[in-house]
Length: 353
Ligand SMILES: Cc1ncc(C[n+]2csc(CCOP(=O)(O)OP(=O)(O)O)c2C)c(N)n1
Ligand SMILES: [Mg+2]
Image (cartoon, rainbow, N blue to C red):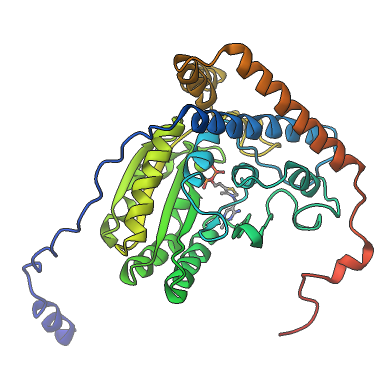
């Protein structure tokens, strides 16, 4: 006892002087793209929306089994961020709400829909389903069902880019709920210590299943979550694709110049339930409607395009084309055969290692 008390009293009472301040990135500027670039963002966001609506229908028809988490409302996040990356050079990893991220990479909607319906032509040969899609060719590393697990995997991807000196970065998405997981902070520590090229992105859609961010998070300004690791954070309007793209450029410059990781908090909203089986009793219809009316990312960009002289008819024609692409993807998925029985033992561990 006496020994312990002596040890305590030997502890210095004055705190060490604060470490020098970390350099901060400049405030990002809203992206000023050409008319064609903006139209492309619009097309990609609308493709994600229509694809997800169709996935919801197919789920209702019993054609999609297991879990299915839709991305409706959050389209500007994946499109704005990934448009600033180099596919095949930079890596991306995310959670189970992953269809939009794959579409934003230009991956064929047919093979994504075939994966959702568990067909052999799917991107994971029909064996991954909604939550576990990969494309090594695009350096898209999933698709993960364990909340927060992708953050340490993504930090490893960042380590690989630095170790191999291949000039790539890792874009690591996770949710507001995942932001309270312990492994996120172990990853932050290593990423900053080793100055890894990682953009950590919190997709703050306000809810983790039925729990609102304010109810579950002591610090609900999630962009500040890297502060004790000296990782700078920026809060971004995730419903404005041009603001997202601007922030993505700032973040890309930061990590590519060797300054270590950066954290972006994207404020967004999901219109549908957590997954297809969520009755969403924890929030009012009025709350959802009000976001749809005031902040919808696709409507937002449509108004911007109309200001640039694009006629409403042109946007309607684009919507028609996209509906056709999605209908074709659904037909392809329905017509494709299920995986061959011999696939049962491929890509899975069937032995000890
Ligand atoms: C380690 C772990 N704990 C709990 C779950 C169950 N679970 C699945 S999704 C989820 C909520 C995550 O919310 P958030 O990170 O905000 O992502 P969002 O669904 O909003 O995209 C929970 C608790 C899980 N899959 N893994
Ligand atoms: Mg969430």
